[in-house]
Image (cartoon, rainbow, N blue to C red; front, side, top):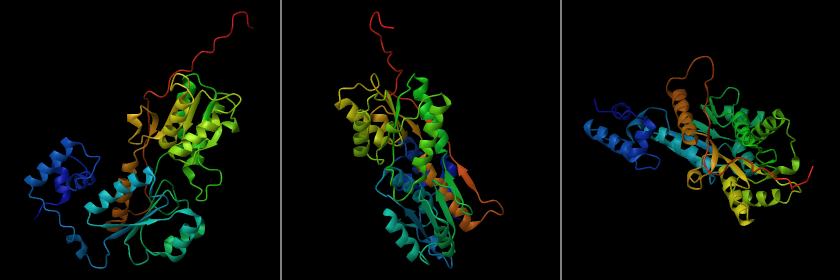
Length: 344
């Protein structure tokens, strides 16, 4: 019997997704790992046949992925993780970029994926009751990433706890005036992650008896430019922050530029922490809350394949992946404020 991709993964001591990425020359694979995979494939005489699994009767061998903002880093990385797993199993991926509230409504009303896909992965797109019902009408397995919906297998992180840990890190360094860079207040897609991260931030402040100042909660729209503009706004406060928690690394990096342009030293004058562990974060020394974005996609792809091949009985599976505080060089203890001689 010819060797399978699972045989190669076992021989190389890696996941099937890693084998797929290595054989296709995709990034995020260490050179030593890639060499090990290639050697295992050669020793096992493995030859990938993308068409072999399409012979299964009654299957399109295509998976639909619904993505609200495909150009943003989180979504591209999550898609890459899921695609690696699905491609390794012989599936094609059909992307549906649903941007804006109107686009979502049109998509769910027309359901263009009907009869074209064997399963659907929905990435971080909040769904109303009637929209969930429409997805159920498609009569194919559905897996969600970033949000937990009754009846669908899902992959999430604990945004509330992670944001609380980020804020606690700053409080532990002596900071009391901590700004929050978050989403637009009139977010048409009503993403859940910004809301949960705000809750974690506020809980941490209150648990230490610190004031939650609405003037320090500034929208940054999860972008470099938005973060830069939000930081400029926060610095105009009568009592400006000594630290910033940005709900994404993009906003944090934009905030760093604004701070430095204003003559502030980071972290001596202003500590900044982000969220995600974007691939640029380590190059700018950004302290951040790391989430395993690629792994979230990989797990979603694996859950969907399980629904297609051997659906688990009983409880719908839910996977919560861990986050981790990564301390680099953009956070430091708050500078002591020296009082003039003779002051009270």
